[in-house]
Image 1 (spheres, rainbow, N blue to C red):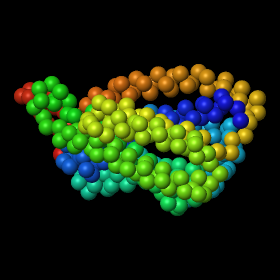
Image 2 (image 1 turned 180 degrees about the horizontal axis):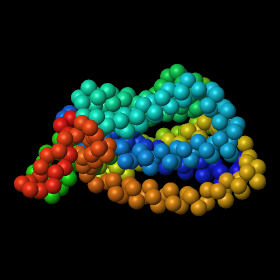
Image 3 (image 1 turned 90 degrees about the vertical axis):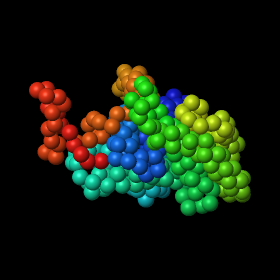
Image 4 (image 1 turned 45 degrees about the horizontal axis):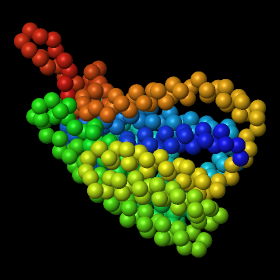
Length: 341
């Protein structure tokens, strides 16, 4: 096993899970956090731009697996093809909901794509959990231990989404003068403590099941236990507080531990990479990776600010036939508005 390509793949997966936890987790929480039409618009506006940068990391990881680790691709994808098929369907459904929701101003249309966003987000989180649990359990996603790991991954996605929502769902006017209520952001802030405690409980169950004989079939219990300990520390750090302060960083650590913990704990079949192939990939990706990192850091810093309830993803485009013109002042210019949720 060569260390450089393995570390590169791990870094791409860590970047994906840390970042995808924000938009996927927030999508899972939309029914609880976004009760009004304005809150649903703001939730979509908060999640939608983020997923565009996040999925670059996943696409990169898929390319690295296909090009550098064919044995891993064959073993994982072939053995878990029903789970990956559902994962792909959920991914496409969630993305379609984010793209199409604002293309028309009709309650039924919004309801359809809201359901796609929520259902797709839950499918993505559950399937990633089943993949991680199955790899640790030796291939079976239906064993009690694998299901416990899947439940833990789902809770971590929810925690990451709640921490993200506590920042992004604050109405922009709230920060200026406190004149606008921030019910969705407050609800997300309260959830962080609850979800951290639930995560600790689920982690304890998974640890007990993992200690049973044969639970980690062919895996490395000590390595998996070390990963579980890091997750426990991260969850404990935010279990006594509410809001995005600690949970933002703690949830990032917990999500970031997932990929390396599974990779090391499951003893995945990774063969040495031929030198020529490794050189070709390094030359092709060396200029791209720094740009990915800088771009994602810039995107993350930019999107930590409160999300607006208007924009491309939040309401119908200006050219939409459902929009209508309204005057902003006597003799002033006219802008388009829409009345949908």
